[in-house]
Amino acid sequence: MKFYQLAQIFSKLEKTSSRLEMTDILHKMIKLCTPLEVEKVLYLVTGRVVPKYVSLEFNMAEKMVMKSLSLCFSLEESDVKKLYKEKGDLGIVAEYLSLKESSGKKDMLVNEVFERLKIIAQYRGKESQSKKIEDLSNLLKTLKSISCKYVVRIILGTLRLGIGEKTIIDSLSWVVKGDKSLRKKIERAYYLCSDLGYVGRKLVEDGVKGLDTIVLIPGRPISPELSQREKSAEAIISRLKRAIIQPKLDGLRCQLHKWVEKGKPMVALFSRNLEVLTHMFPEVVKGAEMLEGDSFILDGELVGYREETGEFIPFQQTIQRRRKYDIEKKAGEIPVSLFCFDLMYLNGEDLTLLPYRERLNKLERLIPQNFELSLKVVESNEVSETKEVQKLFDTYVSAGLEGLMAKSPTSQYQPGVRNYDWIKLRRSYEVRLADTIDGVILGYYKGRGKLTKFGIGAFLVGIYNEEKDEFQTIAKVGTGVKEDEWEEIKTNLDKIKVDHLLPRVNIAKELMPDVLVYPQIVVVIRADEITRSPLHTAGKEGDESGFALRFPRLEKFNRPDKTVDEITTVKEIIEMYQH
DNA sequence: GCTGTCTGCCCC
DNA sequence: ATTCTGC
DNA sequence: GCAGAATGGGCAGACAGC
Image (cartoon, protein in one colour):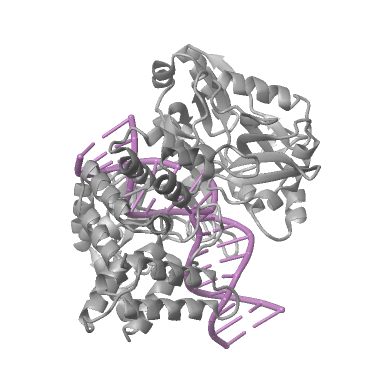
């Protein structure tokens, strides 16, 4: 199959909004492929050249691709940038530029493009960046314009086809069965091995029985089960009736595997996205080695924790443990513990099909309560009354935790699945507990993808520093905005556009908006937390960092009842931060 | 050897 | 992470 | 409700350029 044929199918998918129709188009395309092509096409559709647990990335994003386009089409980088701002998609820019050149290009086979992309991904070390840029430029020169569009998008990981893993899985079911009845089975196989290309190839080669060899194996990560959100204790009980309630800790999701190889105990840790974390947390590895079980797979939250005081360490510090160098030194400063909440495999036995209550019992027997080596079982309470849930929620929130997790006591462990078997109730979902600030818009940024048509995708929000008598930035906001609000905001901001940075406005150069505006429009911004910021200028004093909002979103656009003199001040932010 | 820029199916 | 949108 | 695609702050690491 030629790559441009694939590109034409992508183009058709992009124009389709009905998922049933997408599934139909996709499954017909898969039928046209040889098994090996299926494997490669499925990797490409997910923006990769290898399965996701293999750490081979392009290390090439918008800046590098812009350089490549400028080389390929002999343009100044600033011109490419201008086109990007205008079109909101570097794939479209590549197609546009390629179209202006001669049209007699041969294109290449899907397999050839795949290999070329793999080579680009594999460059590393000195001069690797220029090689990537040059190789992509040469590739684009030999491809038809429509292929250029999608090659660029594959590298950027933004195919924007409306196709994700779930739709691909449905299509695979259609390929072998003519309907989507195999979805559950394929889904489980995929989330157990985390290799969509392999699952696709096996299915095409051997049919459904090809999946039977895919089983849980310690040492190979499985996709973690995910949760839905709810807004109240009542909603949780109404869904689950009975629930196992646990505190929600603010750290990193972590899957721990232990097994025996050549008589030696082996341990591996994986992140939520199946990245290897093993070497970063030696104290957790040691703890697992000391446990009695020979082989197991468990799930938990890795969080900075001081055993002596029972104090949890904030996320911003915990995340510093995710590193390659100076591990022991950082481990001394920021000790972590793995707070486990699930057990999926124990001594040769797959436990994922057992009810959660039973898995939890086995977990509690595996890790003794007084175990002191960086491995603990999270506290659990099984309840059936709203007020019990509420009481636990209040307790956890008072203790400074994020909120709670509620889990169905009877549910199986479903890898990769996000449904209401697991529900999170976060502190910030309760309006009374969220941090809300009144800020002023200082400028805006062009949008990408589906926001291109509005000409805006985010805006910069400032607060007032009384001491310095200036506006300082505290957050960029690009979520919580409905489509008609985007239009309204853009219209309003364009009326007060300014062509230079005003005095009494303090913005870091990295955050400089595409369009600056006169500070006049007051907005309400909601956030989960106030954090110290290396970038935002709010409250910044010399070398001391400023403040920013964690997970900022628009609560209310345009508060005409408030003027700029009444917005939140730095002094107020500092009070909120200390609280 | 230092510093700034860019990247990450990053983490959240 | 949160949020919005089309189905 | 699902699935997908927009968007945030901020961390460490890799390179490139001086």
